[in-house]
Length: 151
Ligand code: ZN
Image (cartoon, rainbow, N blue to C red):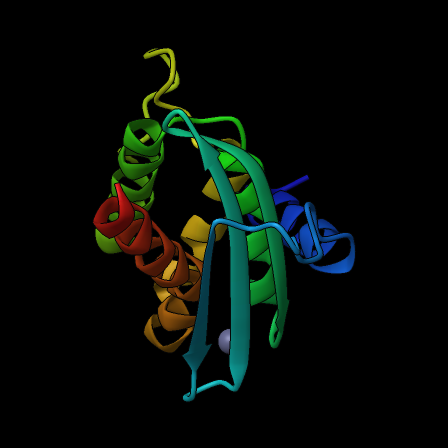
């Protein structure tokens, strides 16, 4: 299977079966985001205990890129510390910002791999869709800003 095809399968799998979908009535932090250029919506509930994202729940609607990105993000951040989540966010943004053909994700370095999120690097070819992929991460940054103000 060609890499692009594999990426497409991964994205569609997350779109059809979003991970950690729902809302938390006892959430400590909540944020909502929109991407008007595509009509995507995303909301995020977090429970943070001792600096760890112990519970993550997401809801949203919109295109496959935005919703798959949110599902992959939820997978990637659950159980991580706030600092680790910020590091993952930086890696994701770096991956989405560099020129096609240069991959900043080095599998030789433990912890450097973004897992399923790497499937989104194909989106770089479509600048208008980068906003879709970025929506859940912008929403996450908002939620974490709230967490930092509170602590
Ligand atoms: Zn979209």
